[in-house]
Figure 1: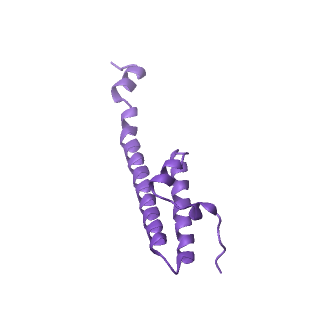
Figure 2 (figure 1 turned 30 degrees about the horizontal axis):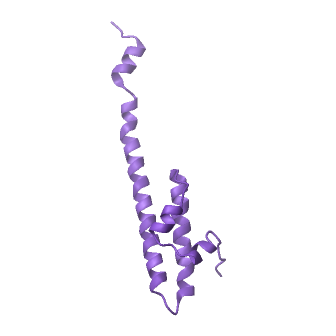
Length: 104
């Protein structure tokens, strides 16, 4: 005897197949946020420890912070005040955030 399709769909549970994929997507999001956070921490530390070549380190810090903000936006996080405070991002980094310098 053939089962009716709604009964078959309930038995198979197609939503269970997406659970593994959803888990993998969430893991990739967490990994990308962690990598972006690490880059910001390293860049801000390099900027803080730079004395003479601070102007050279500033674009690297700005790029790392900007990339981190973009990554957060792609995932759905829109607020930055806590991130700026927790990572001690200096105002000079935020001043020209996102501005790109053409490299020769």
